[in-house]
Length: 300
Length: 293
Image 1 (tube, rainbow over the protein chains, first blue to last red):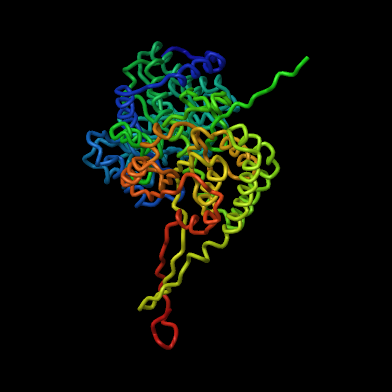
Image 2 (image 1 turned 90 degrees about the horizontal axis):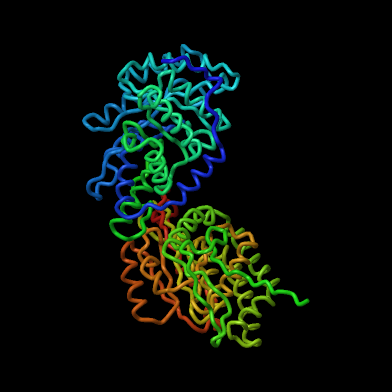
């Protein structure tokens, strides 16, 4: 890895980003392309429940839903993964045995990340030991704002080490607390160079969560990193993506920024809970010609 | 120098906002071959958006106290009273006589007051305590159906429209209304009244356009709980009733023309859009007979 100065990351053209987003949202995707996009979006969802009120039964239901999205529609994929708190990992792994659905766990004192290194390591280890395939960590935004980029870098590297080679690490920047697009770019670069397998926008606990402009900046960071190193990093916008139309716009943006290679759930995910139902309703509408109701799809 | 008159752009009313139709289409309103306005020719997508707005507004509208809904209906009447002259002028523009227009606007205001009064009373009318032979307290109460799709009367521009809307929202439902195709001016102006009278956005959504284009989705949409057709076309009635089966919507037919008649002031119009919920509540045996209630 070449020597990289994180105080001097590329600056973002905010007006240019806005303009690009305007052009993306003005496009409409219809018919066959829409159907393909909808199926693809379902297959990229990390079906998520991260509430204080989560119960074992809720996690069980979520796991069931992940591979039985709507049994009356033929040929549906499963979601990519379920995303839960570390204490539910063992249960989720058990529930999803024999399926393609992976288990992702948040860790490192999610969602604030305000804790000691020991706690964060232990948090990660518990998730990994219980069989999580993926770990979603949060960066220390406080340290980032204080300009302690090395601290942030080292922390990510430490967690990646704890994950090992086989467990993929998603690094949550929490862009809603980071502020400007320049800072988002900077945090993305730090995360990727420190060993992230995915970079992720948000915890879903802070508003604004994922937005198109922020995601575009992160995708461009991934592209530049790929040009530099040849390594493909994944992207996961999370929080606030609840309509199929918006999901299709994200897919369009990925395709046009990074290319078709990224259009698999190996490299792109949606962190969402209500998106799946909206996509399912759109698929049912495309098939039947009749507008659907949420009442006919399972709520988790 | 003479002043250039500023003409109003008539738009549609969805979720408390006044967008143009997403389709960008329009049709012309005429009175005796004289063009009077361009109206939005709403598409099925506009209808879909309106249903989404109506659905998301329904829970909190039904959750308001009956007394508060009553106040809000009264408030609509107040604001309408303040715009009396404008509505009379619009009805005249669409071909009504001054005398009839005045009568229609006045009765519309009175009708809103009438239904405002019913908001916190119809529940008593239609609730019951039911005799059962067991130790249960068994009671039934009316609850709103949810989202109602409405084809407003073609011949009654204001009074017919208001009668439908009032009876639906008084009972805690929200609605998506397609205004009369040719007498559509008042419907949009009435939306302005709604927007400024404490009615939360999404409770009433008003579209303008052609019934023939929207009939299928109005009657098929699975997130619509009831449909009301005010008209006389037998084919349309058949389609409405048949398509309603798709998701077991309630289908209602009301008349098109004369809404001046007193028979249109009845709590049964509110009851039309209520489902009855019955609760079995376990209790100890009460009363000497041992049969409870």
